[in-house]
Structure formats: C-alpha cells, structure tokens
Length: 115
Image (tube, rainbow, N blue to C red; front, top):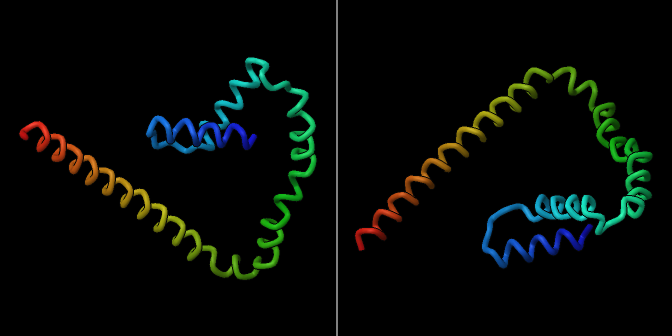
C-alpha cells in the first residue's frame, strides 16, 4: 500500500498537481485490484484481520466517552454549540478565503494580459 502512496506522491509532484496523494494512491490501488495487478487473495488476509479487530481500534474512543460521561452529560449543550459554531465559522472562513483567492487570481491574470 505504501508503494501506491509514494508513487502517487511522485506523480503529483512530477505533474505539479495539488491533490492528496493518499486519495490518488487509493485510486491506483483500486485500479491495480481491478486489473489483477494485485491479487485479491494478497489483500484478503490483512483486510480480514482489520475487520476482525476493528473494535480494538474503537475501544479508546468509547472508553473516553465512558470516562467523561458525567462531564458530557453536564455540558452537552455547550459542546454541541461549540461544534456548531466552529464548524460554521470554518465553512464561512474557507468560503471567504477561496473567494478572495479567486479575485486575486483574476486580477493577476488580468494584469498579465495587459502587460
């Protein structure tokens, strides 16, 4: 799997494309599975182990919820409010930043055309 990640990082760097290499690596991996470059049996053993032990990866999350259960019960409104406000602010700030960036790019392109 790491081979696909590093291959995708190399491809993206070579082509000067800004894209998450992990996603491209997963796409390359899926294509390799579809075309039989990687045999399903090779992946099957590891994937079955992860599926069987999935609960082990979730235990810390659920344990944390149990440990802080009283605190969560007392402050659930404040927690939800903070989640809602910060998510909304993140979306708004990202939108404004992208809008500003697009205006900057348009001005930059217009200046290049005039020169």
